[in-house]
Image (cartoon, rainbow, N blue to C red; front, side):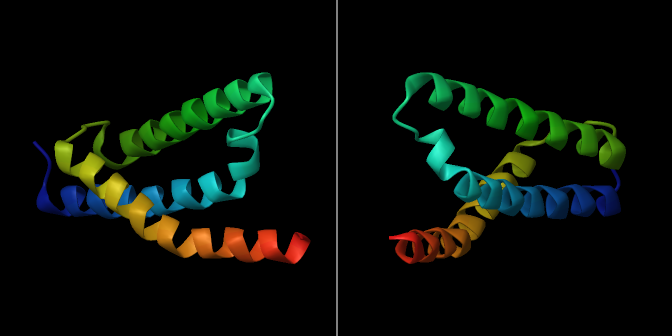
Length: 98
């Protein structure tokens, strides 16, 4: 059983981690959706494995690795919020290079 303080820390960490993953996703967008199939597969696998590993390693430090459904909801919410913000930067960067 987790205390309320640990649950709040886990929830905030998951929200911030979702925003971080969104930022990394938009930064590596051109590699994740590359036309060359081998680059696309390798970059997607690397992105997924490193993201999940980082999340669980830090979650073990916060709450001994206890996973709850609201943590996944918090990650998704953080990703959506972060994606709205960082997508704007990706399109501005694409316009500047064209």
